[in-house]
Image (cartoon, rainbow, N blue to C red; front, side, top):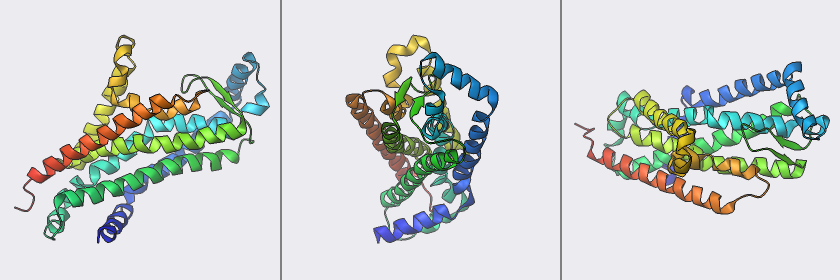
Length: 278
């Protein structure tokens, strides 16, 4: 019965048009970024940066370089937005529509219902992250040749990788993005369990993320950066280091796990105390 209920929740989620907003915007944003990088002035600036560091332009302006740049930008901006949008809808939207009262009339505990909805959101987060990486490679390959990876400073740390090593880093980075996307979804899901509108749950989650991001980037708070949630959510960027700091990755995953469990516990507690059926 658990898997049948999970299947129904998945059908319910992917039956909504707003679920596909993130996938559609990724397609549009990626193609815009590709076109911009085809402009002569932008290509000239990248070529200068490569030549000043002694690298061949034709070798490093490649599918992997442009795809990694696109993914890095959208993982910090659009990814949290669309995971928070879905997370804020999972419970609050059904309460707003009145269908949650009918669901709770069945012999199922509230904790089980929330767990089913959260697992559905986690599946959505996984598909969203993987589609981001896959779309990036597919559309970039139409305009740029296959070659080695060059990570641009400012978005990631400066680095140069062979094509095989670059593709490996690209895949691992997307696997590491999934816990970060789930954390953002769980934060919005927690607010969705309270008595509030879906938009309010989404805005609250995004506000916390943006406040954390702003405070993390303040130079005077450099010693306190590990205390901000966005610091651990950016663990996927460490994959593009010459030597991956696995201790840092493990530490970040431990914190992300703690964040997800804490948000779920708070959300379940608030949902248990709500009087929905009256």
